[in-house]
Image (tube, rainbow, N blue to C red; front, side, top):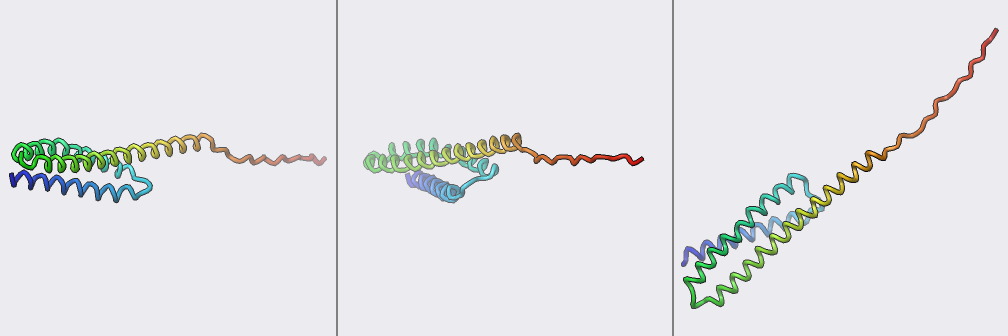
Length: 130
């Protein structure tokens, strides 16, 4: 039982680490392409914690039926953190991708609408001298 609770604490630590990363990233107005890719990969890894946590918490609940209500409260609290972090990361990725798409579209339109200034070619009148 002690080992399972230690593993659960490890998952809590990983959630905290991801939350801190999200706090840092969400303060940036715009993310680079590499930063978006990094966030996407970290999110995929983070999402795998949910199933690990579910299996682990189920084992704890089965082995600790006397404290089932407390364990269910712990489950709910941790699941809410998992869901919130995933939602924030997903939303951030989507909004950053929209910004990138908008910028590409704007640059494409701008490059199509570049108008070069008109410079008239001076005309010369030649007079023949006889």
